Amino acid sequence: MVDFGNKLNRLRTDKGLSQEKLAKKLNITKSMISAYENSIRLPSYDVLIKIALFFNVSIDYLFGFHEKQFLDTTNLTGEQIEILSRLIDQFKNKP
Image (cartoon, rainbow, N blue to C red; front, side):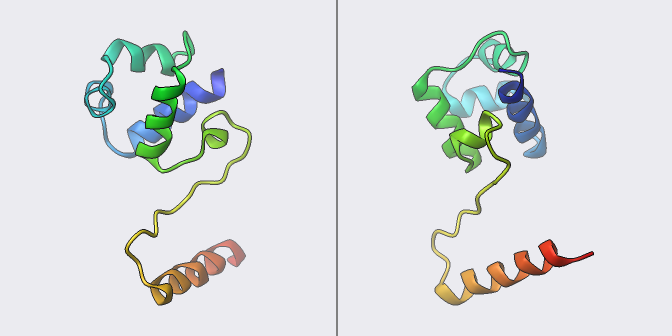
C-alpha cells in the first residue's frame, strides 16, 4: 500500500498539481487524494483506472510491481515513434 501512495504523490507533484486540482480532474474529493497518498486507503477500481489513465501509467506501476512508465504516442506517425524509440535507447545506453 505504501508504494501506491508514494507513486501517486510523485506523479501528482511531477505534473505540478495540488491535491485539490487532481481531485477535481478525477471527480473525487481532496481528502480522498490525501488518504491515498498517506496510505490510509486504496482507491476503488473505477478511481484506480482513472488515475492510471490520467497519468498514462499501468496499474502495475502504481502498485510498484514494475517501474515502467509509458509514453502516449497517440497521433504520432510511425517515423516519429521510431525517432523517440531511438532517443530512449540512447539515454538507456548512456554511461
